[in-house]
Image (tube, rainbow, N blue to C red; front, side, top):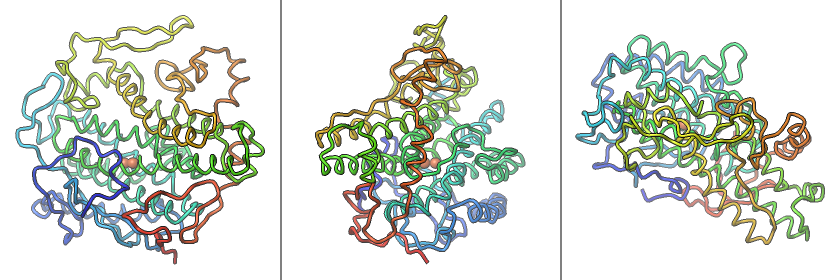
Length: 497
Ligand SMILES: [Fe+2]
Ligand SMILES: [Fe+2]
């Protein structure tokens, strides 16, 4: 099947295959890993599968389990021809196990084992560290489905609803990808971790998801689009780093997951972009020049641009915390062990071992910013965060083009790296988006300009009325330029029963 417009805006270069690998859909668990030849593994996964379906029905999209959704299903892992589209009820989606093709002769790309053949089995000395990396990645996948489970009810169109559900089923498949690794390679404790992944719940007091941002609420569509642009992009960075793993099955899993992740980023970028487009159009039609004329703009049924900036500031800062402490001995060990590389490890021009190298890390010392040369091994997280911030920019530039074209005087910017952080070097500091170090009183004075306040959130909530007529869109969001799989504008993306 030819390339479709919804998946390729960010197709990672890492994906390449020597041969088309068919996925076996005759099996109860579709896969391209010859599952039927490993009876013990098959049995273990078949006993996990009903628990997964129970989890999906309990915690997946609320109220739409019987709706027929126009979903894409991977039928191969070949970059040009891996997707098939059709209406499916979500609980019947064919979640499966898909690995990118094996690269013959692949070697460990970084750390003290650099150049040795990539591991096909778990290296014993790194077993628990490797398991932890897989569990943490795996935990984010069902968490985001849980966070987004009520959004279907307020969808701004059937097109957007379909995109939400596509993201949700793929996050479910990403859980499968990590569970496959746990169950196949980690024996009994892997099976226990696989079960625990179905038991934690986003924002649950007693048994929350592992990472902070995955316990935040995603209560509205603006949050969803910001999440898929900024927070799924953390997913992209983590997957890209894990795709460099010397543990080859993890690398191959992540390489295929990255192709799916590209669509999630697309949903976020175009979702925010279409929201901006609707605002600019409404402002121009009403002859409003000042982007700060909040009251008049909100009366038009669109979001004012400064509100979108505050919302973006919140999501960016919370997501930056997901990278963990900038200086981290755990991250150093994961890299040195060869379990997790850097972003684009293979393209980097250094010795990939970093014994003597340093990396510039921004810190606050005695109330001032200083850039310190920190041993590069201990700065792996800091570097990945810097790569993430750079990766966020291209979509923001495209949003600014929309505003510029409309002749409105406003630009979206990324807040300073240290703004509103709770984890790492800047936790406990008060720093504004421009990078000024503030007193508590100054922070309290300025906060309402930088982060969404109660009135903002109430306004956002008030706009979340569903728009479910074919081809219709809520006032605050412009229609997409192209339909999914080139479907026409009035296509029934979701058949609600
Ligand atoms: Fe994911
Ligand atoms: Fe994602």
